[in-house]
Length: 91
Image (cartoon, rainbow, N blue to C red; front, side, top):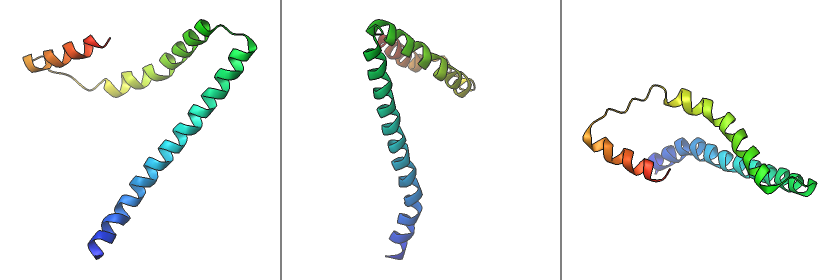
């Protein structure tokens, strides 16, 4: 029984991190909904709003994608060609 309690104590911070992440995501989505509703009520075009949203997300996510994936090198061998094809299929 002591071993299970120790394992539960180790998992508690992990579960707390997950819970806090989900909670933060919910607040961000609620904020996004409020901003979207306010922008559309002010009369901005739906197409223009989508374009602005995509440009802002590109500007925010591109640095993370570049620096986090900079050191990852995918060796070009035949079994990776299949995964590359499947990734390109979705884009």
